[in-house]
Image 1 (cartoon, helix red, strand yellow):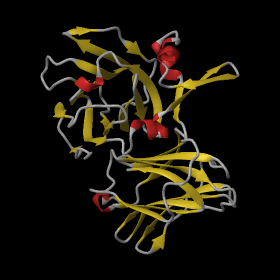
Image 2 (cartoon, helix red, strand yellow; image 1 turned 30 degrees about the vertical axis):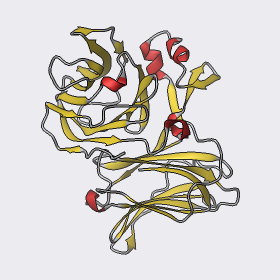
Image 3 (cartoon, rainbow, N blue to C red; image 1 turned 45 degrees about the horizontal axis):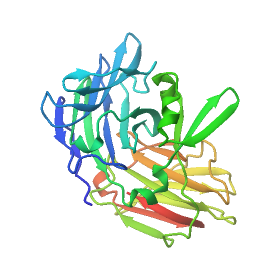
Image 4 (cartoon, helix red, strand yellow; image 1 turned 90 degrees about the horizontal axis):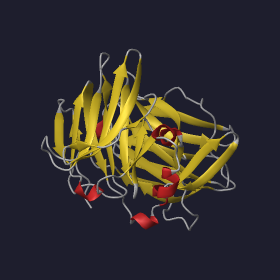
Length: 337
């Protein structure tokens, strides 16, 4: 299944088709910047390109004074449903953002800058959604689309794990469990709960290391790749690299002997300054999921569904960053670009 080419640097308001429509496992990623004087903006996943089209998901950050909140809703037969509101927003005025909508069986997962923000239960069939519109106080950089590479029932990272903290206890369950969603007392509680990508069940590694993949069109703002695997018991280090024709734009290098994750770039045959802050989220003998999102200013790196690191771009010719390679003493089970 071919992935639709992104819409790049479009003027707002913008409306465009989603080729092939929406289905479980597909992700739509909007990259841009909230204007300093924005009062609100909106992203609509809708059923057609007309102004009168039904809207399956209306995602609407609103700003009042120095604060803001987000309203989500559905428009059906020209009538709005009940609003789902949050008390705050992770999209402050004047900030760059990467906003992703992941289609689940029962809901949309909304992910902001690599971190889960909220769930919105489907009110209209996703099969009807075939367009996206953006309007309001933002600069729109790109709208990118990513299809699942494997059948849904084989993709471990589409299974979600609900982690709801109640006092000091933690309740776990399936993110596809509609009853669990409906037990929240309010949409705000649903937005505050944490859904993380669950590592896949252990199986024989599906990839031989060192691994290399071509990234068609380059790795530009709005694109995401996900790597899943298991750290072997005797691992000293492994690395995930985004390469261009003359170097490495992002070198992501967990080192167990140093108890640190090193980030760096190789430019003009010289390594730059290493970045090591942010902790060590990897453990020998344990499975992991790493997702890297290209933002306008940086890479946002999430480990097991939690954003752990950002790495400011040192190489800006994004179209030339077209190779992903992985090496080291790990068992690699899934790569999605």
